[in-house]
Length: 153
Image (cartoon, helix red, strand yellow):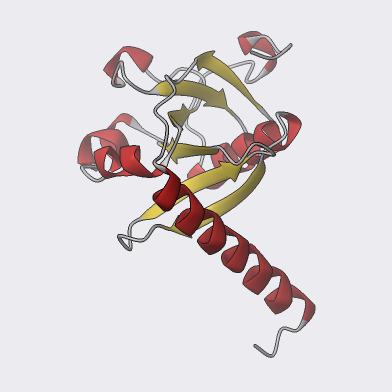
C-alpha cells in the first residue's frame, strides 16, 4: 500500500481522460520502484495501457478505463493475465469499482498520482515468458529513448 488517501486524489468525482489516469498510474508506479512503459505491445500483439517492471523482474500491468462504457466494451483484458505478475484496472475516483473483476487489483488515479484501492493477486509468469518479455521491455524502452534523442528515426 502507500501513504495516500483516496480523498487526496480527486476532490470531486468526475470523468478524466485516459491520458490523465495513465500519467497518475505511471507516477505511482515510479514511486513503488517500477519502471513504467505505456502502450506496450505483448508477444500476442495486444497493447497494454501501462506495464511496469520492478528491480526483482516482476511485471505489473494496469488497464486504464476512463468510463463504464470503456470497461464494458473491452473484451481483451483477460488475455493479459499470462503476461503479468499483477493485473490492475486503473480508474478515476467515482468509477463504480464493484463492476471490476475480483481477480484484478484496482488503482484509483488522477493526472497527478494514484492509490491502490485493492491489491492484485500474485500470478507468477513462467521463466521463459518472463525472460522473453524482459528483453522485449528493454528493447522497447531503448528504442523509445533513442527516438527522443534522435527524432529523425
